[in-house]
Image (cartoon, rainbow, N blue to C red; front, top):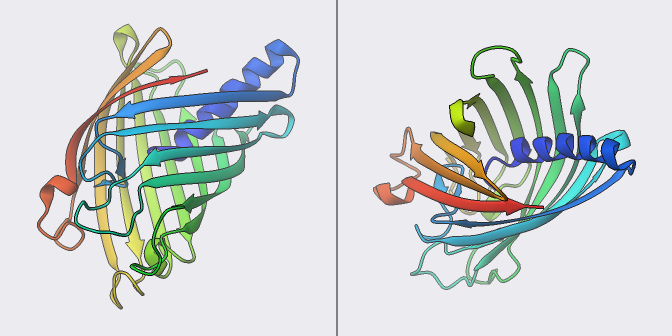
Length: 250
């Protein structure tokens, strides 16, 4: 799920402000998006096609707890017949701020592919535990926010073995309400049923520009794999793309 921990942490912190104003510890929200290509960790999940996505979130401000569900359509490969056409993510965690202004977020995420035919491929469902830290340099030009994240799965997608994902982000606030974001990350998976005994490892990056206009958010992001010899298998289009997304939340 695109920029998952960053978006959830921001949502929880904004929920805390809303809760204080409304004098209620509970906060419910929803989100919806239309994107030209669902890209997950640098790789298309919709065979380079569009996706409709959305979810619901609940936050309990006194302890920084949140939980939610998010879904997207899929098309891993038009030539396959495993029938995986939807992804549903279930997640929960805790987020907050230390006294020095560093934000933190820890939680768990379960990826579910309800219509996959497990007789034709290894099981796609898997669980990840994640954590992230962030800090905003308030009062500095462009208000840079830096972040780092770590996700760990004991049984990665396709019944592979351990998966470890490490990421770093930089977000800048530009004039006229524009935002500029950078991400660089590495995915390392120990092999088993899907990727064989050697597994795979690759790095990827993204650069995006975003702006909110009224109730809508607009995002244009370039995704690319840095070392794609193994993971892309010569299909550069699956590992590099310019993606436009329109989203809204309430």
